Length: 58
Image 1 (cartoon, one colour):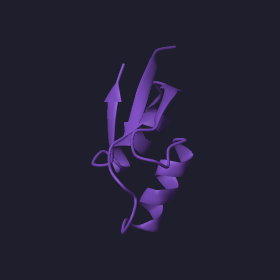
Image 2: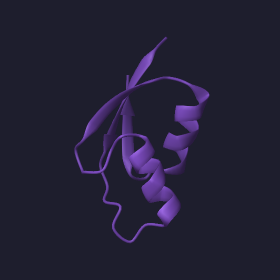
Image 3: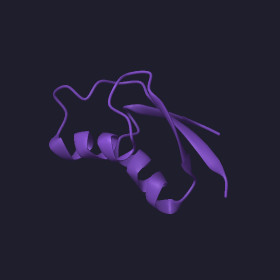
Image 4: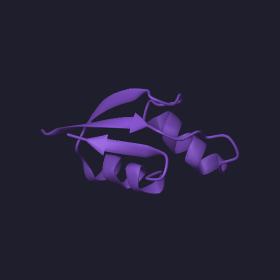
């Protein structure tokens, strides 16, 4: 399965709780932290919810 790298580029300070929970579920939590995930519709949906806080590369 294809892999994607997700990097946090924005802070979760003053963000809604749901966005903070999505960031935590992606394994992020600090700016510049990078995690690798399988490219699934579930992960893509989570990324879409916090697209202003993360950047994606393959």
